[in-house]
Image (tube, rainbow, N blue to C red):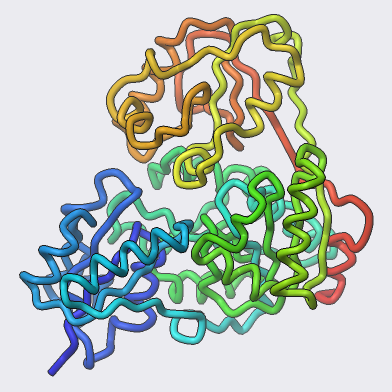
Length: 436
């Protein structure tokens, strides 16, 4: 008898786990996905053209809140946990829910889910969301490009639209972003690569994506999302740790997996972290992965018009996932507001509307910062309305993209930019010389 399976996910690793392990596996029947974290993903189907011949009607996606009922109603034998940036304690709460309803609870690891490339792969991942993966990935791409390599970045999935149209997406221009109706979160990851002349692939089926990317790449850079481990087997696995959140590197799934797997560990933000935080992270590295090379780095910030901040009442907008499931209470925009002498950081909560207001209800740790939520056109409109409702002098944009390209802001705005800067040796350039 086939084992009946439910996959718990968030529109990313869950689909990859299905594609690589379950899609053509006649020992199992995947009855359902559950979804969390991503608005409006539940109530849809994983489509038949992605699910394969064993699933001609596709696979339904339900809210995670229904987990126990689904296990009982569908006689589920195994629950597969397949999403990231969750505390170890929370993972076991999920496990307890599955076990109490009668099902087994499982995690699938690298041997079951990693794909092999015919080209060298450098992966950039992290122990938490919001550590600085994106700027580090850009630095890695620049170093490799300067070495004369044709670099293609493959980004961890963010398929929040029509899954059948997102099987394999290629981004080489802003027009490509518009054509694929990219969300703010997608644009934050793709635009900086495009600005550097780096082609980016993403989507749903990461074997199809890999084979397309291999056609135009000398080397592939896996641009990791959240604190997930790579979908591809890496020749060099670079992982960032955050001294602003010391101890988290050992307390979150699968961030600790990345910590233990890493060939290179980057201690980022040492310019703004406390000595105690930096020391705690170093002790974690020494305890579980002392053979890894360690790079120390800063994330200096700068703005082009600091006079628009000094003495002004400002609204600070930060990267959405960093604040929400990354659990940070501030980011580069907040640092810029303090650095350049804002007179007040305006609380955006009383001006928020719709799903933005709901975000503050769900993530209680947020207060003075506005997360750049934009998972669809409606949410982008609500973000725009929230910004324009706000009584402030200046909007500080701490996201990696220029929000004014996609949102009409009715007051002066300044962008905060930041980049990775290694301190001392080894540098990433020295480490990446192995690919010359």
